[in-house]
Image (cartoon, rainbow, N blue to C red; front, top):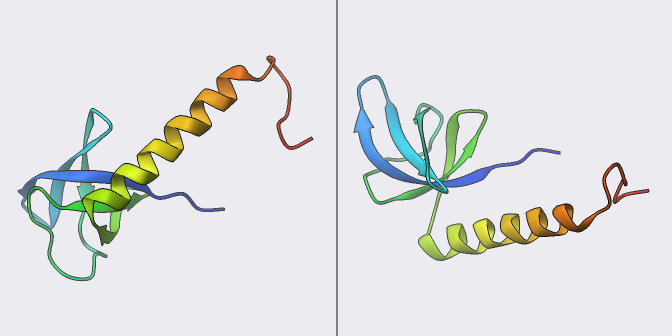
Length: 85
């Protein structure tokens, strides 16, 4: 299974790189495989350090909210319990 995380583009950098914000954490990522251009303020999906797709702000917010819900559910499990067992 692959996972892509929404991020907000903060600034464009040299060599097709960008600084993004992922839930309060800033990272430098590559725009090399992104189809089209990104600009500060855009939202992109990040997978293994690469922006793979532009998304709108609403989709980014929905996805981040889902991640937060999953995190809270994980915290409620007894330690060592496998939720898929």
